[in-house]
Amino acid sequence: MSLGTVRLINAVFYAHHGVMQEEHRIGGRYEVDVSVDLDFKAAAETDDLSRTVDYERIYRLVQELVTRNRFYLIEKLAYLIAQRVLDAYACVQGIEVTVRKPNPPVGGPCDRAEAVFRYRRAEEQA
Image 1 (tube, rainbow, N blue to C red):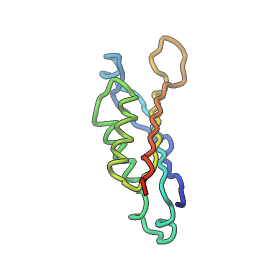
Image 2 (cartoon, rainbow, N blue to C red):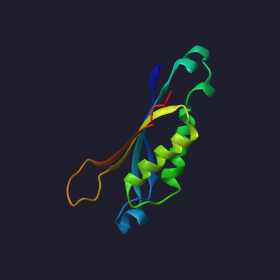
Image 3 (cartoon, rainbow, N blue to C red):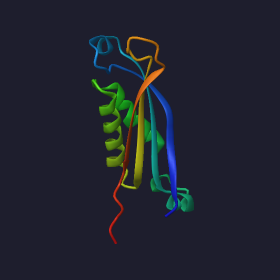
Image 4 (cartoon, helix red, strand yellow):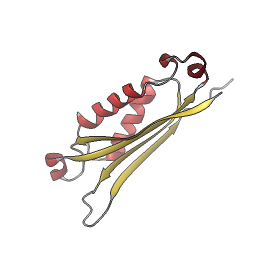
């Protein structure tokens, strides 16, 4: 297997997530990273997009989940993004999704809060 990684780094959206009522009302900036591991061999040999993941499509999946929903927890958002990508691409062997909330309301200075979800598909039994 020729394992490789495709990443989207720091996709930025404005959305309404958080535990505090004000976060749902006012909204804020959210940043998302998606990293997928998959076999590069077929895509590399054919130079064919259908043999890999389409990161534009992944971006749209992320955008839809982040901007069209409201969640209390960024953990739920990270989990759902991963599940949506895994459902869309059987070729993905592993995924890591990071959701960041810059300047979270924690009562003092804080650059960001983030939730990271990792998942690896079980190895196929021969």
